[in-house]
Length: 408
Image 1 (cartoon, one colour):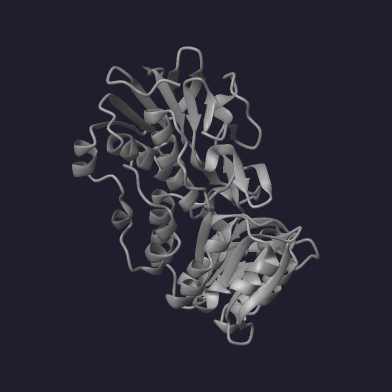
Image 2 (tube, rainbow, N blue to C red):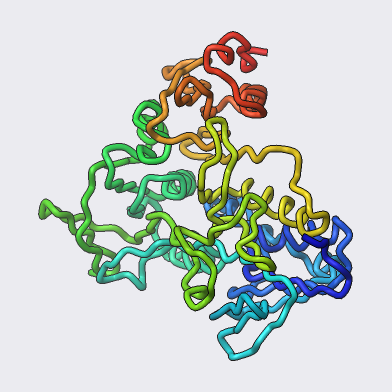
């Protein structure tokens, strides 16, 4: 494809991490045409991971999460269209229709609309909190300010968001109660072995975690909420938070000609059509992993950043970046840090290679068909990063055990 020219206008739909980093990357690559960044929130682009960590903990004000300061917006010459949702995309004319009827015409469009918090269908749905946006945290903060110390706060979902919220609330003097529908938290993400090794973290931190919880309704009652279970039991909570996963934001593309399948289907260079790309959480892309190329959609902070740099480089040069994409994510919960490199499947074999469960500090390798597919660590950040070399190029498990980079 031909590189972008000064006469081009790049329209970015989605003013989150991926959309903003892409806009910055285009300027860093030398693009001097127009950039318009459209976002459905009224806030300039900000970082989401600190919301369930630093902000909920009370260490940061939500404003501290800001990515796009006035100075950065001006220096990068990005036109912001905030508080406006995209409702349609015409691929042939690369035009975006907004919820107020405005039409934004570009020469290229980049979809970066990400995901939103999944909402469960309960009687008190409108009063149940989620942790996804700045507005979510401001609303939750107002609720917490009105609660007495040691109030019970039910958290539906024991995954990363739920665990991080429980950690922050416990530290602040509340009584979080984590309700997980699966046999163990993170079972469907990290697999049977790793989820079992992590199972005691909540209890060790003084947080009550209940697994195999089948909730049928949450209703408002007596200034709080009653949670009803399939077995007939009920419990009362002063507030309720949902951490039930995410839904990809692709509904607005229903009338487009793009291929939608658990996200926007893109090529290895993140292109969904000749002049339309997609990046970050919304992109269903071709990932070249240790066992070959596979279609994936990955909701990681680092993947969004890497996608932004990749697509900007491709649009400016027509070439793919040489460095492989190695997914990475982390979670600070119950006083520990969980980190994962790669994109292992929950069914992959797991081999602990460093540390021990009893010490709550360890490193383990995922493998499939003899090839290392991922690395997971608990409170061993240095050992994890030393082990990244095992994913830079395909590595056999036996060879990895001989190299033992985690021990350096």
